[in-house]
Image (cartoon, rainbow, N blue to C red; front, top):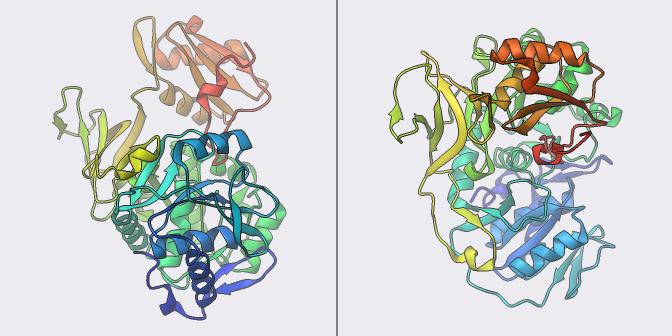
Length: 467
């Protein structure tokens, strides 16, 4: 398992808290093993996570000793937590001091977190199952992704390889660890013997950049929204000499913004690496080598090491020609076991067998680089014409409308925006772009675009806003 040999890094720094306290690998392992020693192997534990040492040590301990953790938002609402407790009946809860469980007793506290024994009985869990994650990251939905030890090891090895991670690398948290992208950064850094600055601070807070500079961080990751905001913050003017590379995943970044960051990073001697992934693939499926960041801006790149990408047409046949849209299919050992919605599902084995139908529509250029063009479910039919909401959204952002999101029904495409814009002009522009009459479009101003904790737009929450 990825954490089985952390001891070899000895007294080198593994974790750095906001306060400045540093934890060596030896200290991390000792505390992780201590927490794990109080739990039964092959039992389910809910970890209510923050980007803090307590959450990381419990997670490391669980994976080292065969417990199965479900990573949840540390601020999950009580009613949502109760819903999950009833669906999965975990044996243990690891959560902040001051928050009380509805059942059970406290076994241990590190001063910040407490380990609760719920009193629930153990039940059969598949031997391959390692971790449970929510695809949405922050809801109380009982539908979770089942990740195996093999999945995590395969993806960690691939990521560490294409990022050329070493023990000299130091990351800083920019996303929650219960989000698959944020978790993958923690896993790969520790696996490589590198270190992580743990913070809950937003990238938009001064303390974040103070920590980054003080501890000479070499890399961070961000979702599209992160980079849209960094553009406004004039990232190009920032003096960040320790940065070796930055990564982007969690959704499609507009090609022009991607090209801009590629140029800025190249000027600064920083590698800008666009990536593509999903919780159902453990984390990563594709990456754009930094050397192509400018020439192939907007591309998700090529398959990660040991993985394979392909395109499939509506009949299920593989597309071999270039520049033809099809559903993106991924093959690799990091494709997860499947979903679960209740405790009985945790005994299931591998239902995907290394193949993931992503639901994304993509095309491959003549050089073998892939480009996402939309989602199978993110299409409307306007006046009988199939229109991609993602394509329209990307077009708007390329025209300078950065704070917008597209939704709607088959009779109307609605652009939601926080900006004061000329509605008539925008609808005419969309008409020209789609070759449809401007009456097919509407513009609604909202106070904010609803997003989850990892920055992804909550499209379902848009419906009805401002209407």
